[in-house]
Image (cartoon, rainbow, N blue to C red; front, side, top):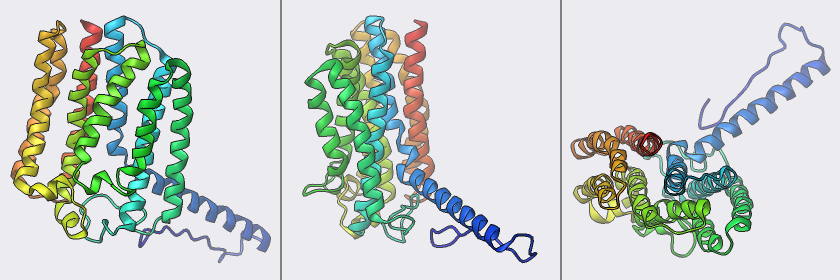
Length: 328
């Protein structure tokens, strides 16, 4: 392997194969190698570490809806989850292609390799795959529209548009320091309240509180990512919040997101669902480790570990919420 390309070699030095059989086997090996390389590239472009930001809002929203009503719509939950994942993956593919086109991904990148900038896939191929995932999201949205009507359009259409508009278009949010706001709004409030609405057919204030917690914890992912890449982004003109604020305030933003997510749990006491405050325990424990790492370590490859921890923190929050809802 070299320069992002995989090579497979088949030899007939021993003369075991006839000419036609050898050519056939060589074609099969070549096809397998290309397929394997494409799958690996697609997995990298999908950015698996970011996908909890799509899964957790649906998971948490379904748990809350069940807790409030005692009912769970499995078919609608699957359509919601697949739609959310498709939009998230499409966003990641578009981000990969657009960042490469704008020169935002350079050889000095500290994070994972980007498939377009590294030459593993062409920009056109990455964009087409991203569009394919948006088609999947539209199909899922059609199922939800049949069940819940016009509110699904109000939720789904902006989400689909911003899958590209996050980094592309005339006003790319990621290049204007709006990434965290976008995540809190769409992966927090809209995703959680929308999921609860899909499950129950009603809007609940509890969904707003849970959406705020999930949104803040999801924003930690992008804040760590942008803090790590702050110096590169500043050079390439990507004005993320970390670039605009500087390193000290960038670290403070991560501290604030984690603390607010944890202590918003106190509102569950006021809203007569006191045991749901226990969902904040993983945030208080793992969140402190993340904050310590952000405050004491210089941005670099070590932040990739903090990013993974932030993803685990988000998953553990949903798991604890689910556990408490079931037991109590």
